Amino acid sequence: EEVRTKGMFNLSLLLQQKANNLATSGNLEEAKAAIIEASKLLDDAKPLIDARIALGGSNSEDAMYASQFKPMRVQCHRVLGQVMAGMGDMVSCEQEFRIASEKFPDIPGIWAALSRVLEIQGKMDEAQVCKAKFEALQNSM
Image 1: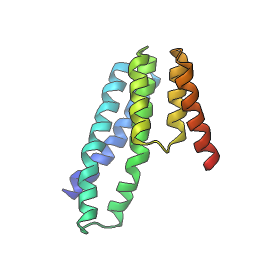
Image 2: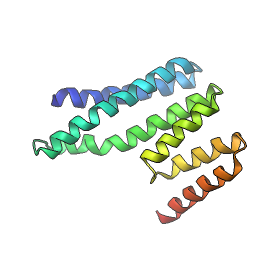
Image 3: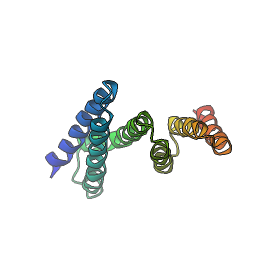
Image 4: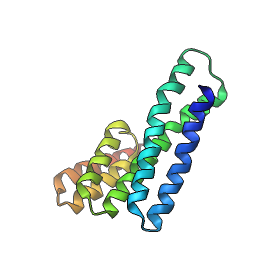
């Protein structure tokens, strides 16, 4: 189980890199599929590693993997949001950044991205709220 969980994290990282490369080359459909799979692997691995840590059967490597969940998962949200924007699907892009802002409200970049997406769609009042959250987080760092 331990090897499987770590493999899920590592495969997710490889899929994130693949998604970035595919998106850069303009293959947005395959980039979307890769980043969705990367997200699913992380979401499936997180409770497994958390359980091992909670039960006391973990080691420092488990803690390292657990600490990487948040930045890796945030990156998945960012990439998927960018891919959706690149595909012209601003509704799905907005939805992805909203999900990210709910899961990780302490990450300034998520609020900045959500603000930009809302501005593009003409939702200026909501965009200003998100921009204010971004600035408050930036100033508190």
